[in-house]
Image 1 (cartoon, rainbow, N blue to C red):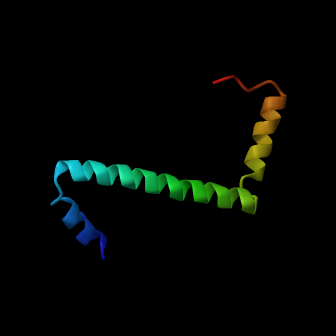
Image 2: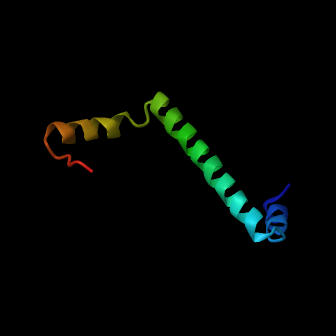
Length: 65
């Protein structure tokens, strides 16, 4: 199924179902994001950034949120 076909089907949905679809898509997108972060962590792609964060924290540059 193409994106154009999906878009065509979506515009035919009642507003309530569009809202349900949006919630589902948001959840699905979050799952994809979480998997990507986990893969990046495991592959070491975030090591440099995490080291910088640790250094800033040690230097007292971090503030509570």
